[in-house]
Structure formats: structure tokens, C-alpha cells
Length: 77
Image (cartoon, rainbow, N blue to C red; front, top):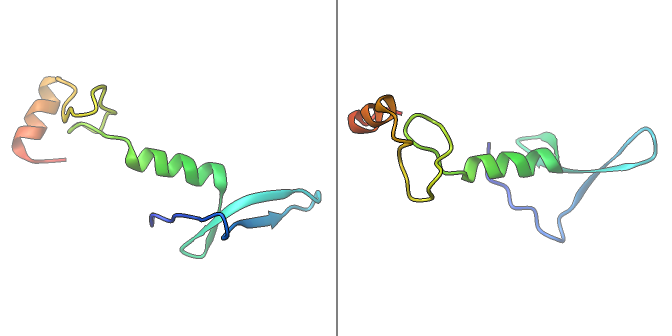
């Protein structure tokens, strides 16, 4: 997913059949609901350890499991 930074002057809304508006972001020609885009951004920016789990410590690169340490040592992801 491309990292897109919508600005205050570039807001996109989709008119729903019920007459409501849904805030969206266009990414590679696809309309993505704003909440989904924010979730994806958060997930992309969350630090993960070598085994793919979310790291508890901000500077950690491993959760401490044997498998994770071995994967980190071998350089594999």
C-alpha cells in the first residue's frame, strides 16, 4: 500500500445510497474507507520483531523467543 497523506484541503467523500457521506482515501484507484486507511497506516508503522509479532518495547527487534532470536540472527524475516 502506498503511503498517502491526505491533507485538510484534499478530503474525499463517497455519497451513499442512504444519503450519508463516507470519508474515503483513493489508493491506486481504489476507494478505501478513512477508518480502514488509518488502521492500515497504524499497522504499517507499528514496530514488529523478527517473528512478525508486535514488539512490546519500542526499540526491541525480538520478543525473546528462541525462534525469533534464531530468525533475527540468520537475517531472515
